[in-house]
Image (tube, rainbow, N blue to C red; front, side, top):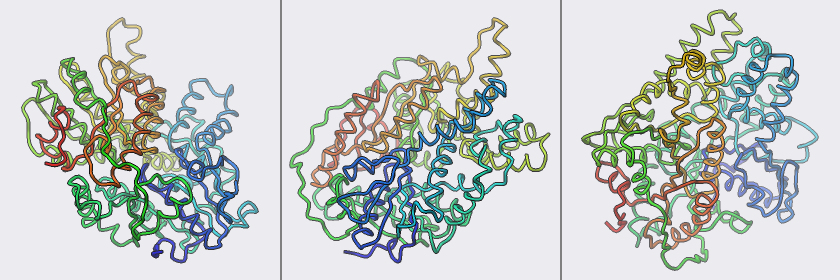
Amino acid sequence: MAAIKFLDQPPRFLFFTGKGGVGKTSIACATAIQLADAGKRVLLVSTDPASNVGQVFGVSIGNRITAIAAVPNLAALEIDPQAAAQAYRDRIVGPVRGVLPDGVVKGIEEQLSGACTTEIAAFDEFTALLIDSALTADYDHIIFDTAPTGHTIRLLQLPGAWSDFLEEGKGDASCLGPLAGLEKQREQYKAAVDALADADHTRLILVARAQQATLREVTRTHEELTAIGLSQQHLVINGILPHIEAENDPLAAAIHEREHLALATLPEVLKTLPRDEVMLKPFNLVGLDALRQLLVDTPVQWHVRVASPIELDEPSLAELVDDIAKDSHGLVMLMGKGGVGKTTLAAAVAVELAHRGLPVHLTTSDPAAHLTETLSGSLENLTISRIDPVAETERYRQHVLQTKGAKLDTQGKALLEEDLRSPCTEEIAVFQAFSRIIREAGKQFVVMDTAPTGHTLLLLDATGAYHREISRQMGSSGLHYTTPMMQLQDTQRTKVLLVTLAETTPVLEAANLQADLRRAGIEPWAWVINNSVAATVIHSPLLRQRAANELREINAVATTHAQRYAVVPLLREEPIGISRLLELAGGKRINPER
């Protein structure tokens, strides 16, 4: 068995972090098995909302320490972050319900509904596992599937006074409030954060794929964690296509070349980290046999069951565009987690609509060079704008500090400034910039890449933002008015496309996003499954097996999650340039042999 760098003299705590779909759960499980097989007593803890640790091992785990009978020395625990967040909200909101005005209570509940609160609540659950306690005393290693973000750790490092700050109604900027009521546990939290930053006891493993977009995301994570003192990091590039698969398959050869380029141009800050590369396997990583093969880089003799190409007959992106184009104008929003291809698909939809002679404004908060590279040209009827998230966020921060912060004391301003560094702040700032463009959708198509989550939209509404303010001013006037929020909720004027991949975690994350949007009164119009191997012609035995594995997720989207959907094939050549974008969205046969 080849040496794995991140398992070289492993400390007691190992944290695996990374975007959905990169394989961190599989790698965490494989690591736990390898250490247990070596005679170490191991506890595997998952705080991933899309956790399938129990499914991987074929046992029911849940929120209790459960021995894995088939692996001596191994036990597992699944913390349900949603249940933890609900219990956390009940503990904080309960004492003020009936004491504070209903509107204030509702605002607090909404502030506690976002991702920050869920993550803090999960951290609250596993804090006891990070510090010396009877619960974990018997284990040599504790492995965490999903680590807290830098933002969460910064919040935990703040001084007190959150409860008073919230109850006095000062904290209504973004997601302020997750730490209310935590004073009793502050010493325990400090010990936990100190343990995270102790390189002798803790190692963070950043899991990524050999894709430039994913590597950009993991670079941000690395820099954010390093900035707060968590410097003991390793990088794992997962799912690299073995070069042998590229010999007789043009598509596999193109994938191999793209991955090789991504690794050759690795961001400089990542080059300094110890790095492991894990090869793509043809099988689902479920069961002990599969997991024991994952961290082996020697060729694996595995029986591939799919001998012939899969004939997949699913709706295409062109069919969705046909329905969109029936109207001469409207707002089209593409939403989804990072790395699923939102920018490319937004460009493809915009280019196809413009090609049909319809006026289109494509707007994005993605880095300008990426969109410029994707389009690689201009087209009649198409205008493009780019919103700079950094500039918009700073503009919004200054506005809040000059208004809400004007009457705060020094401590209050410090808390407000920290809150304004949350991920929600950027979403709100960018959405306000987008709102200036949304009005154009009454006379042309506006295609929007990178949209705010349902939590952010609800937060804008709950804290007296534009929609609520206009509604109050106009409600009794008898005048007709439409706010951006109302337009997003109007399915006749707005079509939300959720972008995902045909893999378990990305589909579950998209389903969670859909539920989040529905809470805000926004009904997604369609799902787009991007980069599907099953939707193209392949010869590689490994990729054929991967294609077969996709069918269950495609079926779940078609039968359970989506009102309508489309499947976009993984392409031999990346869809860069007007002609390839037209091919992607225009329904022409994608020929991987070309």
